[in-house]
Image (tube, rainbow, N blue to C red; front, side, top):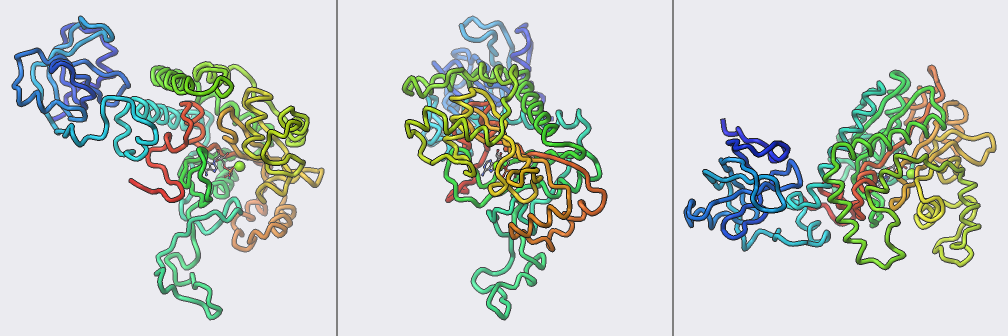
Length: 478
Ligand code: 4AD
Ligand code: MG
């Protein structure tokens, strides 16, 4: 058996009592031809390995370079040095894979996040990214734990679909037709009957519509999968491929929906604090250092840990869209013409407006409800006023919209009428409408953008730094 090693996280949690162990990992630094900082990704902390002077060949020592992988057998003893509780005194060192120090792009120094994005295949080996991706893992695990404990069924909705769940037309086409000479109909349009699926298909923008089908049988389902948006948004909050969690609940109204979303967000944050404290504290320090470069008024009022605790211990503010617009119009920022975009009832709030509400006005997450129907999707339940729908968005400090959801229109005629007005092809969505024909019930759901959530918890400013291999306009490396 090759692998009888102990992981560094497990080892560091023990008392150093002359234990014989084997460890494997990658060299972070090698100081004085004697001290190896070894990391295996199980924790942000390195194990200090001592290669006693004179004990090992010069040839071997030359191969211990940053990035090289090693298998080390040795004895764990209390450390004489400062900064760590134990040392591993090496008895044998085997180089599993060399790393040419001249060519290895990661030097033992601070690199910019922009540079690391260009070498995303190696960036997991830095302190920052290993912390971010361990936290991401914990959050993903917590998502499943939360819904499992509540009796939700995890439904895998399709990735290739023929429908546009959001009706926004921002889809990536999926086809096997030849680009240069696709089969055409008499009128010159492309004949998708000849395509792989016998119709035009695309990558899903949301699993919601299929999720609703599941909720009409299981009561409560959730999806957690990749979604794709061909929107040309080059911002720190948008990806062309992102992961979304979409619970859908039968016998739920808008208020139940808000309650669940708030409980869910708090639960997964708490799970990360309970299980990734060291990583979060590291990221909190990173953020604090980064913010020192900013002018005073651009810095956050709270540190990362403080912010997370604050979110756990306070209720989210709940206001209607109409109230939100009033707050904005009466704000000093509006009066001093500080907003780039105008504010009036009916607008789709811009991120400057959302950020004003959460960061300046309420200073906490805000749930905005009952948006104008014309800026929201066709499936949202129409309110009595004829102008608004039972929508809810959750806005988070530093992020903006983190959740989008609604109570769904369960009344067949109302839904059909709205689809017609919005030019949504009802005939193609016959299966969706069937849920309203056979045992329709009030139901609701929401979508949480997983990367935005990871950004919120890790304090990373750019969404490209919380997904392993980001897909954004003009970029699909790795
Ligand atoms: O508001 P959205 O578009 O809502 C839906 O897709 C609904 N079907 C959800 C539902 O009710 N089941 O997207 C939901 C969330 C947003 O609040 C945001 O957090 C995230 O998904 N999101 C994105 N994240 C990264 N990059 C993008 N381009 C995103 N677009 C939306
Ligand atoms: Mg939205």
